[in-house]
Length: 436
Ligand code: HSE
Image (cartoon, rainbow, N blue to C red; front, side):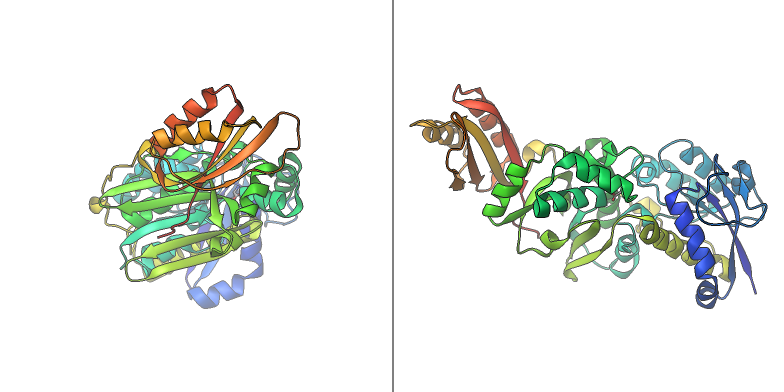
């Protein structure tokens, strides 16, 4: 029986998960692959910490070249994360003819083009299913099963940490900080949790999904990114009263040769399937011209689910290696010379509904002043909520607008926040009532 040797870079949480799959499901993998897979080398700077698993003698090494320059190794799994040294290691492994499996969304979203060019040059495969949605097979669904569709939108709840935090804040009324700590202890958060809570991790993922769906480059620096740190219990409560839930939604849309790619807290109607995606779970909702809408749902973070996605890629590559063929489908789902550079719609031009919470004094004429400023900028109010006064001076006025242009909202809020009756900056949350 053929044997395919695999090298692993990075023996952290996900690396340990991958090791456990090798150990537990070796026979199953052989039956599916028709060849054996051997985890021949694992490189990490730290090879002494007890990870609860026991690699055979000689497998662990601190020398990365024993993986990326080892002629015996066919496939390299990169689970170091971050830009460097992961990028240099991957490029060197590619130049040495190794196929790559990576979970590195930051690297693929920001430096993907360089890695793809190298992969084209050396004729190797690069797979990154684990980079988006943990264990959910969303990338292969877009690239393979659904590839006959023209996609108009891809919407996702893509960060387990943020979804876990928002769910706990919604269901149990807990504060932000202790829930973040719990998510970190459960192994969901990135090493630096600012990438999670500031929306950067989600932005990496939607940049990749949009590129895969729409066949375009996405300039990551241009993706509007707003995290969950400013979400308050008050907004969660008002959203609920209006029949909405607040989620950190990643939005990718394509319309008439232009794309929208953005990440921000979003109010979605409670009745939508996406609103029911709670805890560490992720979901991606796609809209294809023949498929119609479809949603994929599953564990979005954590050792086992992510290891499952890594192993799926590994086995797909190993099948090709065993069959003596190289890459059989394009890395980004479109032929490399067919990838467009579609213009990204600026945030100022997006059109959506808005939730506005204005903090003001409670006296006659206040509402008239606020609605006049909105009216001056063509913004129409759909509904309004003013809870009973609890404090002597400050009261929230909650407004839901009809669809409006972001530039008009920004101008109106500048004027509203400059009024002497307004006591703190108005809180804005975008509302998604049309999933396409
Ligand atoms: N920190 C990420 C999350 C892990 O919370 O979803 C998976 O990418």
